[in-house]
Image (tube, rainbow, N blue to C red; front, side):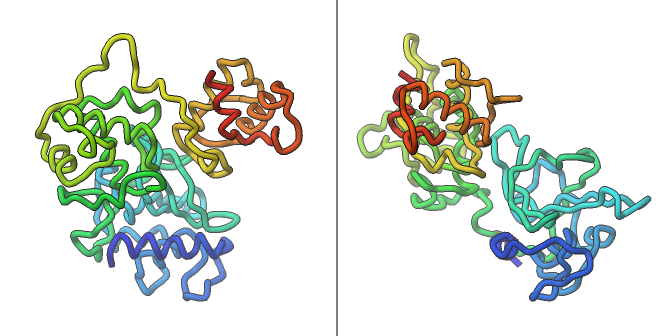
Length: 317
């Protein structure tokens, strides 16, 4: 079993919206609760429970978590109270405070950004790696081999993007990231990559902000020149180009949402925030955007609470 196979099996239940049940079994034969879900994703062939899953795994440090590993809390005193298990799907930010959790919980299978290690009983969760995991799995973001240019650029969302950002931060690129790095490719990744390429003396197509084999080799081996400090009088984060509507939708969590929220507050349109703003898109973000749009005299679909290019331009003007 590879990491990719584990995650792909986990995604099938997410797509099918399998209802949670401790008594029922899905069409693949696995019980529709949290431990049955992990049993299915790991392809164990049996329905284990939170008290037995650890027998199939090796305990690891949380810092070593990779997609397909599990975070397990078993309450031996009363297993029905608090016991739970999730499948680790990758870090969502370079500080590693949140991760993508695949889990079977009420009302149905879900995939969402989750604080490490969980919303409650966080200190009681233990990280494990499946003993039957095949070595050298692609897609984990580890290793020094260049994963290919197709893993980077607009629309990319994978562990390699996260790793690229983390390496760039270590080489002097922290100032380019307001939030992150994370798995979703952003303008910050492009600017930081370009700054690193330019630090090597490269120009033109060699410094286009998309990593190639040479960029990747220097970053993974720790060689080459670091990104120099920002020159006085300017900052690489001053760009306010509209990132695209897809970043501002239910379920989205990214640096653009956080930046939008902070600008709304700065402009006086943050009254709907109870806490935050933060990287996750919420109804409060939509209502604050709508208030700003209405203040421009817009109505109807032009004031639906979702930012477009003109909303973005005026907000950051």
